[in-house]
Amino acid sequence: MIKVLLADDQVLVRAGFRALLDAQPDIEVVGEAGDGHEAVEQARRLRPDVLLMDVRMPRLDGLAATRQIAAEDRLSGPRIVILTTFELDEYVFEALRGGASGFLVKDTEPVELIHAVRAVAAGDALLSPGVTRRLIAEFATRARKPVPDVRLNALTDREREVMALVAEGLTNEEIAERLVVSPATAKTHVSRAMVKLGARDRAQLVVFAYESGLVRPGWL
Image (cartoon, rainbow, N blue to C red; front, side, top):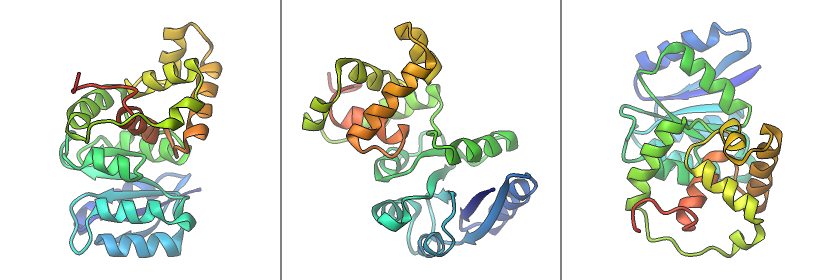
């Protein structure tokens, strides 16, 4: 059973999400929060597998709440999905940097929301290839100029190559096709890169790729 915590200051939004998710046999909404402070407190108490977090909330916004949860070792379990009104919300890249595993647009189709919860609970980053390319290209250009990170030295040439493809938004299957290897091999390279860099998931790997300068979309 996937335990979900909903954090949104709009009661109707939470009610809609709860009705949809609770109707699934493998998903249970264990709690709701109306602001960032409540989200952090309930994450500590309820230990959800997935936390759907609105960006704009009173008292403490979703961005600050995400950073706070991600920074606590005892809260390393919840996968945080940021809820936005627009696909290119200015806070999304910062949220990914802060520890979020992906994002969803609020008017997403119900079946996509259900798939998203299951995917994130399984450890996948919620970044579709097209959205990843637009999002990162838009906001990585506004981030600080990258500084070479010595941790990249721990990666093999193949792992660097795979990491760059992840940053392009490619799935394991697409990476495998590009490099003419099996999907299992591609997944292994991705996993090893994540372990070496201490990345929580693919979303963090994407952020690291751009911030370290391995991939540079806007400042070349």
